[in-house]
Image (cartoon, rainbow over all chains, first blue to last red; front, side):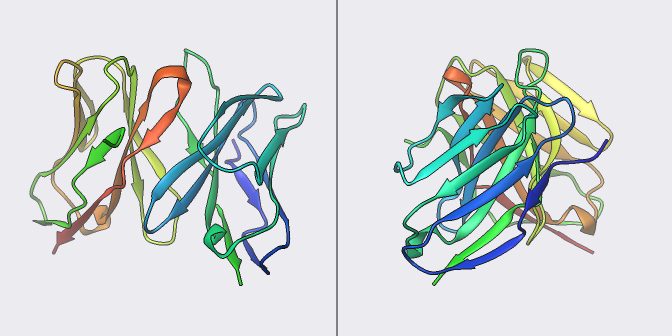
Length: 114
Length: 110
């Protein structure tokens, strides 16, 4: 089975711009979660989508949003970028129900905001 | 108080020794626990999951869970230099929220 894929792998943006990141989960996985990883804060949960519905949301401002499509692919959008948004953005897929909550991470998108 | 706490390390062990990594969590009703390994510049890789009290073994790795003490650990036997990485503890808590510790850096010295 193919693993989780994320595009693009690297991005450089300017303050005030917006960005859209994409994640394709493992085939058959219906849950996609997004995380922000920075050296100071570690892995922080952004949100989780399951069957096109946002099931959970972390403590991030409304500038961070996401969606999930019927094929379980997910996108994350960050508007009005700030310098502090520079981070590694990881998505993780899982079956998302009681038989397995194990999450498998993609390679990440490294976002640099200048 | 953080949801998941780990000693940041660094933890250094000689090759062939047992490395012991520890994690505590705050939500008493948490049901699922995971250990991830993250090499520098890479994304986290799932090593083990554990759901019930006791030990779970997979090759050189053993996860131990004690829900009464809200404590989960990972033992790595016969440590190899290739085990040098940051180990992340993750907990699935109330409402299906996942919380990660900040990780313990492990160095295995040849």
